Length: 438
Image (cartoon, rainbow, N blue to C red):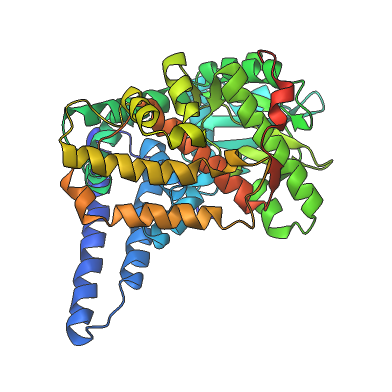
């Protein structure tokens, strides 16, 4: 894979890169509509594929928050055309890495020494390159290590990057009014948190200590003396990413076992810890050589406040969902509905969220749920596609809900997607026996 020797870090440099990408995309549109003049049946598929490829190529040169947003969008396959989702999915764990000289320069800047001065062995080629940083394999005192190095300029460019992305997001998600700022501020705060590896170290140690009793989970050892604000060192865990496991596994019993571990881990975080690893994509999980589930990234943690937790999880109860008075009160508490909504808008969003939440909470209505064979993910995608194309919805302000919904819904959709990929059937309430505060 081609390496990157320089990442634009200034506002002008990053904006220039966006403009260059925009010019390429504009050229794709001109080519598409020129062909359409000759052949009116010209498909839009090739346009989407070309645009997705050019956009992804442009943002991989920038790394950081723009690439992270692409990764997030790739997990929301019902919101964007499939070509974009497929291309952006590479941002989960496979993007062009930094070149060896830039790695060395970055390491010296953050750590004061070259990698070879610190470790007995440091592999110059990265094992994994993602949106915010890349991982190298190393060793010290006969211990295999994973060393995560943050890309230069990532933390400093978050605010300006989001300003570049904002117009696209406003159009895509139909956001209107000043309240949309709360969503952008939520994304910005989480991205800033993800660039603080000292904070990630604390979060990692807390989750490891709190969840060490959960069966079949494996966490790395962390080395604070070999870590800092931009460098994080942990023990190496041998295994394959969940996406690789999903592609090759034929053992249904193993799929169910790993799916159950994943489900119980997330439910325990939500209901016991009241905070959750809010970045559930395949690159953050490993199936170890002895069939345990390794969790290797705690950069994005979402705290769940009491005033959000109660109404949010009450909406998984179908009796409450189907009680118009209680349902209305919960939607008000979650800021999905507003007291001053016009009657037509109130009716539209009440019906829309009732349909969406009824489907979204379906796994909670049975003792066991088969995420692989039920068609559940397809139904969610079709429903999302239905409303994304709704002309009536576009007349209203799509800016609905508490800021906490952004990462909580992302967490659930990501979890559902992982369970679907590994074709797992899980016992929904098995996590309850693990809770301390029952």
